Length: 126
Image (cartoon, rainbow, N blue to C red):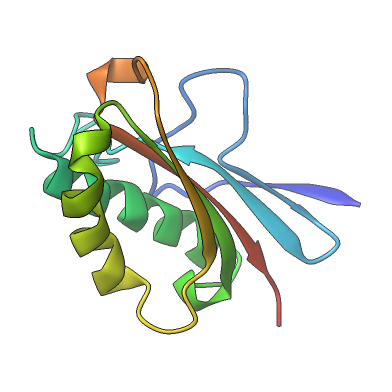
């Protein structure tokens, strides 16, 4: 059975999708843009600030169902400039410290609201 997940501490979906869906103990978190949920604006102009906000948004969605980043098994990182990979990794490594999830990272032509990064995640209940 699938269940829609929503958190007021993460930005609302900007299209016809859910912040996350849980199905059989697995939580699929939609790509989180670096939007501050309180202001509705992009958090910062550089990749470090935007990566941090995107990860915080993933955290907020997971917290809504009593999970955290340690439950994440896979992430996908979308970057508008692959040259930001190193700076993104520096922030990412502060949040995923041991047993890092599997991950893919891609450069894309553009992201919604002119974001520099978007991060999606899959988490599993222990």
